Length: 447
Image 1 (tube, rainbow, N blue to C red):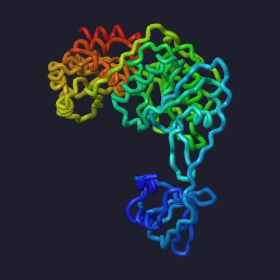
Image 2: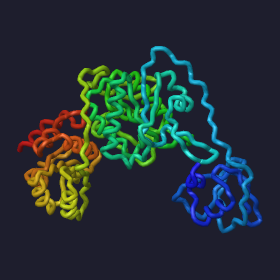
Image 3: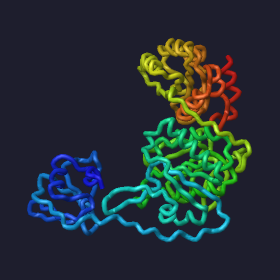
Image 4: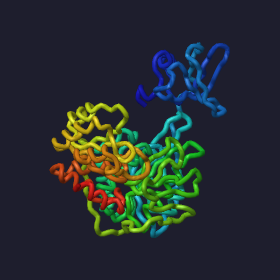
């Protein structure tokens, strides 16, 4: 264990006291604080927590914090026992099960809590997963691997490319389904990205996350994962999708199209909803219940691997009083395409229009979406919308702002000029545009 890890989360005066006593996280310690004596296991701490406390786990299982100002002595009673986890025997493999691979990119859905140290470690071997969720052995011949382990807010277009390449390799290697464990905060962006990179795949690629960590009694990790593996291995369709709770109960898991899903709640188990569409399926009572028609069938022979995402796209939310200089500054950073999240039917302040017109004339793509969660834009209702159309803004109808940003990143990586970007943005690829919207979009685009 490195010196830094040995006293994880401790700093300043507390760290000096612990170092002087020669103790490490996981050691059994005796701490004298005033007239009290406390004995327990030294726990690691969050680095951003109040630095003035030592945290120990008492023999009764409760954690307490002891103020540094009260500590008179620290004594090491026993060294840390090396963490041990004995894998239970892997359940007998049932013949004929589909091969499903789970790929971890981070998040808490498949992690194991070490209650001695308070730490969390990745649990993404097949044996770990089967020990946590033994029901998976009834669903698939399971394999698992870690691609990377980062917070989902640290995802970039480069990570989208890495996920797409890994999924493509697994598909070509014979996997009958792929599950991608992902942090929930930007899972919608990643699901949209793979929807454009893995077009009409022959097997399902299912994103899955957890709103509540696996150490909590209310965790949704296991039920979401079971549904994801069931869809990956047994669904008759092959879509890029997201598997998350349909509501608070564990009884129904919704399967959302990757280009139509959005996280709408910070912590609720049913945070993910399909926007401007229905979930493509539900998993309930051990069955996959198809909810929409015309899904890409499993075994599709039309698979196209189209990776590549540009960093030259931006998503900007309009707000009252927004100065046009913001658009100028974004353009000066080398941005070649902007998705505007406008008000209502697709508007921004009139004072932005001259700048927008100049940027479009310089070859910058500007597409319009709405800040409203549901509905579609219509830029022909009010004068402001008409002026924006005349300035060269492209209406994107009912496309989610996040999906529009991801698609623009994908388009910029392959388009040679502004006209080709416009053509690609208006070409339906993965259900990102409503079918009944297309005639109106094309009419607005050529007007």
